[in-house]
Image (cartoon, rainbow, N blue to C red):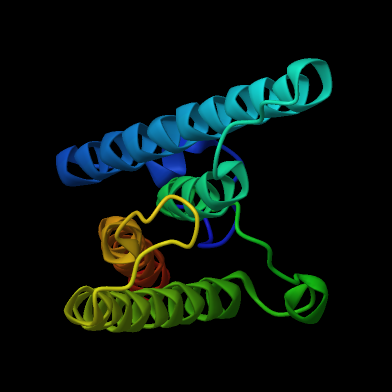
Length: 179
């Protein structure tokens, strides 16, 4: 049996059926977010070229860019969590035992899940409040609550991915205890 925390092969982090479904869902969200960014780049290019060549930019291009960027970037967060590619500082944990490192990783993923759940909750509350207020974007007069509400599923998915990773790391810690 290997020591937890020594991830020398991908097989050590093999996902079960639930993990695979979660991974595919996060991947789909990330791909949609990536396509959203590509669409924003195309829209921005059309607006810039239109502004320079014929003095006709895309109306509300900055509003669309702000709203689209918020939705697209949020859509990618859960995939980063499932890939375990979020920024972390290993400097402080380089000298601790693999078991301790796994335990700290489990705690960090759990904290991420809690924070993502809080953000999802507060964003949903904000979307309802914005809808009740009837707030719209300045130039295009689009209802802002729709954009805010569109971010909520991404943060819920991030919370689920964080919880899944916390459980996975905790299982490695438990396996190390019984060895």
